[in-house]
Length: 260
Image (cartoon, rainbow, N blue to C red; front, side, top):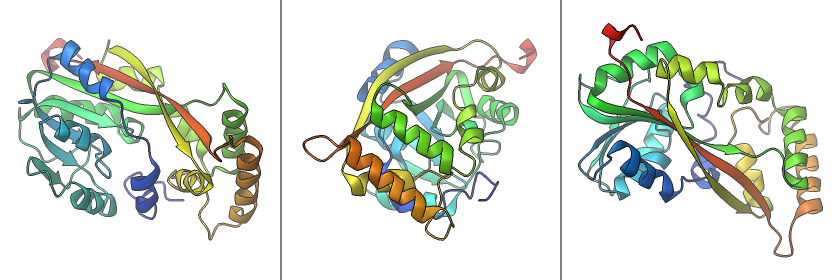
């Protein structure tokens, strides 16, 4: 397992494209109501991955710069979003996007903030944002309790995840959010869900950077347990439900002169 966050997903792109959850339309409506998002707003999607969040803004009519350091994910994004002329793919990192000063109205990070160096990323986001621009972090936070399936699946991750505890502890950590935003921020949350047959569940599992891949010595054992969990909890249609809370955090960053 590589410790470099820019390389962790190189072998997982196909499953990431197929099985990662999308974001609800309510997220865009929130930004319209709370942050003044319009179709003319320019958006930097930093850590854009395969383009899940970029596509939501593109369908809203925005021009989007997708900034992604991982070549495999960036190329998948370029293929998937080739039909959107208002999309620009950029090789860059959260800490060094290569975008021009004061060039975007929104700097957003979808399912990516926990991979950033928060202080360096905040300085970079402040640099590329126009005055009165907004920084937005959003992710689909998988529920770990609330149904027997969710609880069994969480136990599977704790048993077999290579560094699951370390990665999952960063999601939503107040110290990370405060370091990144440099102070106060606003937040909101929306319910979200996916329904999977066993092939879908296997693909969703494989999309996570902390789960064993086929060459790993625990992979076969993990797959047997995953299939047993599925068989135990599938509904009459042969599916299980991944439930999420889509969590949104947003703020205007203070200027350097303010001491933030």
